[in-house]
Length: 199
Image 1 (cartoon, rainbow, N blue to C red):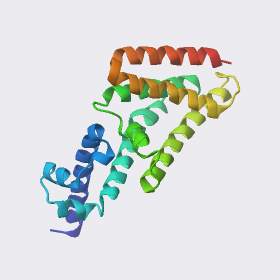
Image 2: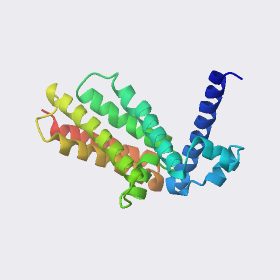
Image 3: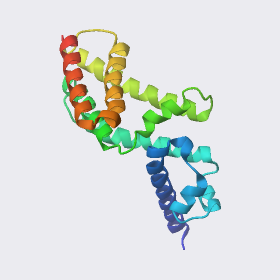
């Protein structure tokens, strides 16, 4: 076996482990991940899993990174196809609601905030960085909407906070009261927000 083939096989195995761990974390949270259970699920030994991840925390970090990439691919990147300003901002919120609907179990990213908000360490730092990245993306979208004359000038940090709050409420309410009701309320909240802040 060539070194290139071995490298490709190793990367594919690592990706398969992350995929299974991600699916598990949607229901158990990152703290619920077990190397032993995961090894059994992918048909490997514990040492085989550890060969790809030096520790449980390394695996948890890889799952968090995977979750952020998935979210970006599902929400941020498609939204960039929309015209700058309010159309793009609305697309971000619509696609975020789609993301909530697609998460059977729960969103790993939202759950990670609850898991690590009061636990100092590398995982909390990573969660904070991801949250800041997403907040910055909302700020940029709001600023573009102001620049395009769609939104009145205002505190873009506050705008991002309010939009995030709407999506977070949809996420929490979906599992309790159903996606259809939560999405309807979320869409109405976005409409009212846009109307209240239009230029």
